[in-house]
Length: 623
Image 1 (tube, helix red, strand yellow):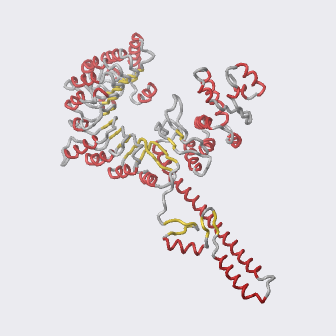
Image 2 (cartoon, helix red, strand yellow):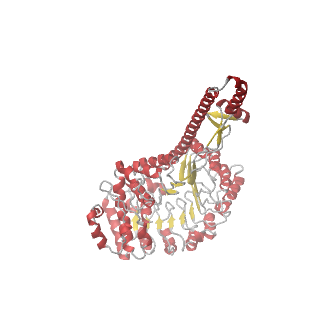
Image 3 (cartoon, helix red, strand yellow):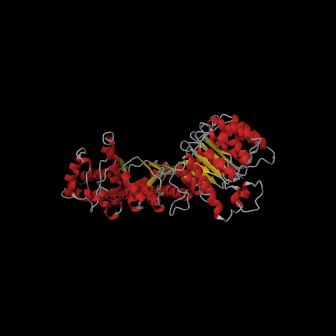
């Protein structure tokens, strides 16, 4: 169907006869330089049960029209005044999709709804918002504070950031955080300027009122003696003096407030302990500005943006910053503690601390501070300089404090501990949790057989949906615990990572029957394990038998590496050792893997890859 149908008035009867079931008022057309606006398409949503084929058609037409309308900013003064509130969403989406920052500014400045969510889960293939579009959005929010047409109260920017460096002109988490903090501070300054301007206008009106009063007094003085007899001078003088005194004490009420002389007003302010800024009155300790818009976002703070973040959180302006997921890098424990004390307690869902030298004492200090956040469900601690291979004074007491702090997180469902080096202490940390975990990531944790034995028997085993044990050395002593763990998590486990665990053909062959029982498994990652081609074929054959599996990250077989590789290489050696330059070996292996998938009927729904660097993108596409 062509777009010209809606641009030509002569074709409207034909359109009406072609679709007799549709009420003709469904389309209210506003022809603006050959463009068309679709209004009231929500009628189709209400009647989608009776006309299910209509909903897709109308939504596609709305998107086409929205693209045409926002493409020409010179026509915005014409259509902005007539657009119904139901079309603001499609117009804003089109402006973001086709990078129209001026249209974004016009729409957001007069946003008719109480809430605006930008950055939610994007459709497959949809690019993140452009940097210019995000900046135009933030500037429009500040301008909308003074626009009576704007009804915005909650701005949701969670998920707006893009950390993929391959996406051009996107805004990362750190840049978005700095821009948000600057916007909060600019909004406060803009409101203060508006207050000063209003105070200046009030002062000028007061001066004008005083001048008018003085002119009235002078006119009464001049007209009081004209036409009067001299013999009544004394009596008339007394009456005129009373009248002048009454006029001098006269005060003019304007807008419910008494306007008095400047000098008298200054005396009253001095007596009451108030000051006059730019001619306007105000207290020495003014009340904070009322919060007009609440801004929710995922924030990224490091040492460079810490001061600006603190200024934005302590700012008493019209914008209030709320954090949904907080990422902290390279900050000391006292700074992180100060930051947590400034955050609103109701909104925080996740905390991610990376590359911070916290140690056991720092974690023991921070974990109790997380208890006041009732909705905190995710805690990630990556490379926080915690190594218990060395015994230090007071270490056991600090570990107990850590365990107690974790126990205070009543809503915790996801725990990620990367490279904390906690051998033999898993029971101490996890036993204090009041609720079973759904996500547990323990890479580079130097787990012992006792740790895995506890995990396989813990309350967390049967509720785990995602488990990461990468870079923990596994051997024959740990296999019974792993098999019991997989048996307990057979109905819930959807993602499993055992990368770099030293699984040879014999060890993996012992685990494969237990893995085949995980009927909910969708993603299996086994990169950087020393498997031969025989072991790899057994792995692929088992993976093809798991009906829910969608992604298998398999290791390069030892036959693909150049000569000289040790018989039992480590994960670091497998990562650094070059692959053979001959492409025939690689092609032969891929042919065998594809043949296995074809024979099992999984060629279309099971994705195999050995690309360790790009597997995350593939996993997201699968999900």
